[in-house]
Length: 102
Image (cartoon, rainbow, N blue to C red):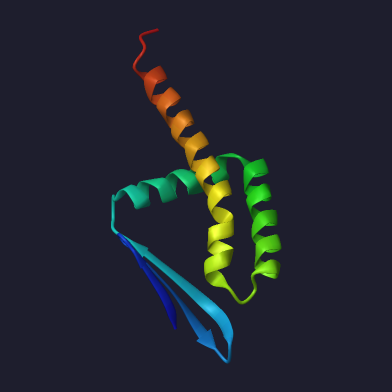
């Protein structure tokens, strides 16, 4: 089993005969990481084009870093951060819009 501990995150991969078959991610409920993760998820659900781009990126990186989970994860970081930034801006604009009287 491989695992990483970062702030309020625990992730572990379980292996069987050298092949990963489960990846478990646990985060503290309502933490900053939790909220960012949900922003990312919800943005991809609402934007199929971005979800497709992420899917293609993951497939490309999985082939490139097949045996190096840390490098695979690091290589996704820039894309994920850009989506979280877009989702945060979008959420802020929506929240400000709700405060206006019509």
